Amino acid sequence: MPTRRASEFPRSVLKIFRQIAAGILLGVALGGSACRRPAAENQAAKPRPSSETEAASSAKKEDRKKPYESEGYAVWYSVPVDSLAKRRAGKDELTAAHNHLPIGTMLRVTHLANGKSVIVRITDRGITRRGVSIDLCKEAAGKLDMISAGSARVRMEELPDDKDIAAAPDSTATAAHP
Image (tube, rainbow, N blue to C red):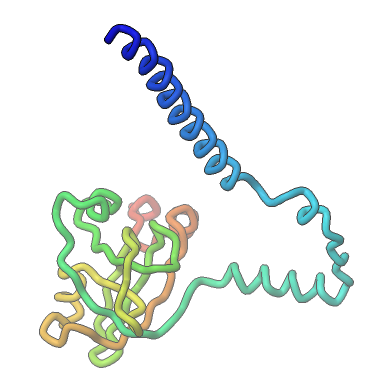
């Protein structure tokens, strides 16, 4: 019986060693797959843009500076009070979800049928319905009178950054008045 235990001990150590080695190899393989592309792909010759393509690319840069404007369909959803979307927004600020605009973007959303508009901050992602451009919080949908319909055709216009608004003269300022 003692000789039997002595012969089993090295096998169990060998089995544990194999499991550890397999785990290390798997980790190395997974870690290597997250690396950048191989150097050969990065060194591929890239054509130098001519003056015509440089002019086209500068026109594209100018296009990117234009504020976002689009028309599409809006739906609404009830945002939980303790959600991340509510925490990203300011106090009493209306929120919305959009799949492409940067988080924090301010939009004016106008209901095309009745002309009512609200200002919302993009605080979320995850629009899953096909054909829907923006998901408004329930409060914003209420101000647009679209809760009963569930969806509405809207126009979305990006508002300038807060920095730009602060730099613009304020028509309601009282400092110039006596």
